[in-house]
Length: 269
Image 1 (cartoon, rainbow, N blue to C red):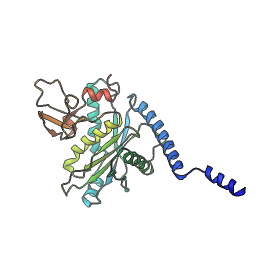
Image 2: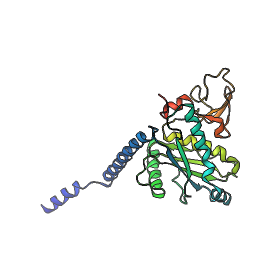
Image 3: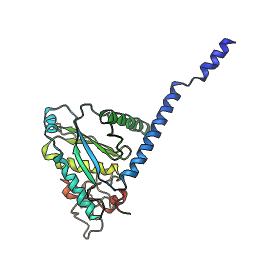
Image 4: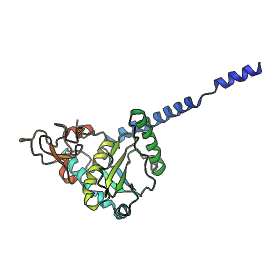
């Protein structure tokens, strides 16, 4: 009889798999609640959103280290001025949407993007990335409106293209891969601004081949003549010069927020 009772007790103990699933669900619920709260706070545009850029040495190169050491908050101030210019074009009540500052250098690299990028792998990567972000840059006093941009710099000497950057509305975080070259600073800021807008609801507006989608990827889709466009739409990143032909915007001075993006980030209805 004692043996039977013992077996019944052991059968009632939760398995490791069920505990793991339960913890995962609780984690998702917690992040979901926080993300919903952040969504409300960041998209009402009642106050300036603080953006902190955390540089990371992505290749351990001395050139990269020297570039990071030379960085100052002023190197990102064009993002503030660009956002102010665009906010004025849309008569946004808030004159200064973003305030970008340079944060501390992070020594530990973020988790690598999964080679098998199916939905489950990406989900687990997202949880690992959030834990990495929390461990290295915990929220300041529960701040729900701070955007954290982790910029992984590379010397770029091997001429290989950089990994894709991303911005996450859930968690208000972005992961940017950038070149550690002074001549690339302006284009790095284009990518950073692009990912910042992802965190507040903007979506990509380019094709799988990188070309701006018409009409949503054009800064002025009703221009006559349509080509060449004068500006790149920030969420497309390229200036269309003819059908199927475009080039990367060299700086934020050559980019705009079109009405599609303005609607997505709640600047217009």
